Structures are given as C-alpha cells and as structure tokens.
Amino acid sequence: MKDPKRIVVWGTGFVGKMIIPEVLRHPTFELVGVGVSHPDKAGRDVGEICGIGPVGLAASDDVEALIALRPDALVHFGPTAAHADDNIRDIGAFLRAGIDVCSTAMTPWVWPAMKLNPPSWIDPITEACAAGGATCFTTGIDPGFANDLLPMTLMGLCAEVRKVKALEILDYINYTGAYEDEMGIGRPPEFTPLLEHTDILVMSWGATVPMMAHAVGVELDEITTTWDKWVTDTPITTAKGVINPGEVAAIHFTINGIYQGKPRICLEHVNRVGTNAAPDWPRGTQDDVYRVEIEGTPSITQETAFRFTDGSGRDAAAAGCLATGLRALNAVPAVNDLPPGWATALDLPLIPGAGTIR
Image (cartoon, rainbow, N blue to C red; front, side):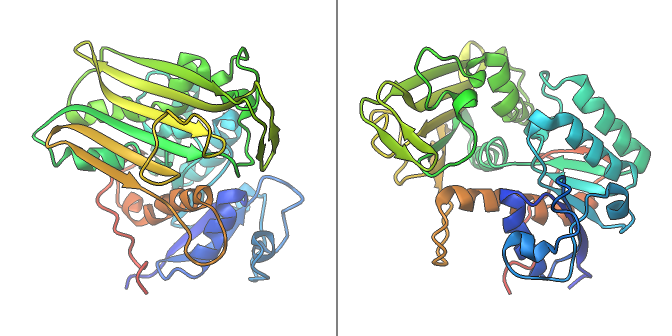
C-alpha cells in the first residue's frame, strides 16, 4: 500500500465529529491536524471533542499553522454557503498554499459553472487554485452524489433517456437542524420560506441539473421549480418540539431542467415530519431513501438507503451525513492526481474506497 495521505480536517460539527474517528483508523489516511472555527475548541484534544477519548492531537483555529503542516489535502466540513465569506477565506488560503481541498460546505460549488453562482464566490477560488497549483472539489449527498454520480452512472446504461429524476424522501422527525425559515416546516402555510423562491431553491439545490445536462451534451431551455405544502391537523412531536395543528409538516418541491419544452432532468424532494404526514406524496419502498427513476430504454429504478447496523442507534440521517463526509475523504487520492483548478464529479474516476476492506 502507498504511504497514507496526510490530512487536515476542518470542522468538528455533526459531520466532522463522525469523520475524524474514521480517519484515525483508516490505513489510507493520516490525520495531522484539525481546524476549528470556535476559539473555545482550540487547544482541546480532538478525540475529546469527538467523544472518543484523548488521541494526542489538539484542535487549532490557526489557519497558517495548519497550512504549515503541509498536508496532502484539506478535507473541509465547514459551515454552509450562508457563511460563504468564511469558507472562501479558509479554503482559499489552503489552495493558495498548494494544498488540494475536498469540501462539503459550499454545495453550489458542486457545479461551479452554474449561472447562479455569483462571481464573488467563484473568482477568488479560481485565482487561489491558479496561484497555488491546487485543486478544489466539492461534493455532498443532495446536491451531490445522490443526484449526480448515481443518476449519471445509471444513464450510462441506457440507449435513450426520456426523463431522469432523482428524489430525496426523508422523515425529519429526528432532525434538529434549521428548517423553519428555510423550508417553512413548523410555520403556518401562508409563511413563504426562503427556499420557496425559485432562484434561491435552484441556487441551493439545483446545481446538479445543469451538470447532468452538460454531461449528456444538451443545453436546457430553462430551470423551473414547484413547491407544495402539507398542513397537519394533529400535533406532531419532533426532536425539536411540537408541530401544531394548522402548521406545515411536510414540503414537496421539484427542480426541473426543461429541454425541448419538457421536464427532462428533475430533482424532487419529499421532506415530511412523521411517517403519517403527507400520505399521498411519493414514498420509497422503505423510509428515508434516495431514489433514481429513469424513463428510457431501458427504464431503471434504483433506491439507496443509508443505515447504521452497529447497534449505535444512530438514524438514517446520520448515516447519510457520514456517507457524505466519506465521499469527500475518499476522493482525496483522486483529487491529488487532477490538474489545478475546479473539479467536479465529472472529473473524478471511479473511487472504490481504497483501504475500506481491512
């Protein structure tokens, strides 16, 4: 086996805390540093932050000190695009120093060529990659591999694709992240959440639609969206509290790539709170799945479920987050071999997960 890749992980939030223990026991990688944004975490043992006991490595909020470690890559699990300036500053510093970056933070960067990406988000990273001769790859689950890698792989099995649709069907009953203002869940139906606005929805979740169009060589007429709400008539107890009667307990949206006047490349979300919510909306063959439906020659349906079977009691959402982080981590050797600049799923080879069987 080749020498392990020396890794700095940025972020000890929900994903980072799950990824760091996996890096520590992974033969393909060596954890040499961990970056944190909160000063109260700086100097603390990384293992204690992650709840696994001391490992002899202190977290740091000093970007220059982490760069000085000269890792093979930064694996970045920073905040969302709501904190774009912070992400651009930190990721850009590593790139300018010649250190490749694999990140899950700025999901519009899954397809940097998306027209809605503002130049202020793209140009600094383009310049940093050029200055340092480094590569920047962004992935996720959705947007990310569940609606780019998986559907495009299956499209390669077809003679003709009349429509491809990638669905996220999740129950948020145990989800503790923000969804009230973003999705309107837990709000009255007359409330207009941020993501109900077409441009914001496409910006946040739609990057893989033009990516797939580019991959198969078509130019979309336009990208449209739909947004539906389901209101509960009974109280629903969630991990965050209670959704009261008369409040939204499920949302259903679509992002549609229109080609020759028809929706051809589509993303669809059904996010409900509780299995009984929105009973007439799409479901998987089991709860909490990512589903690809191709209408073509041949037609194909594929469903992916992320689960923990280790007795830890962690739910499907946590399993999906772990898979998201590991996609970024396992991509490091391939990204190291790419030329400088932006990288997307279209640039990467098959990543079978070297060192995962041990």
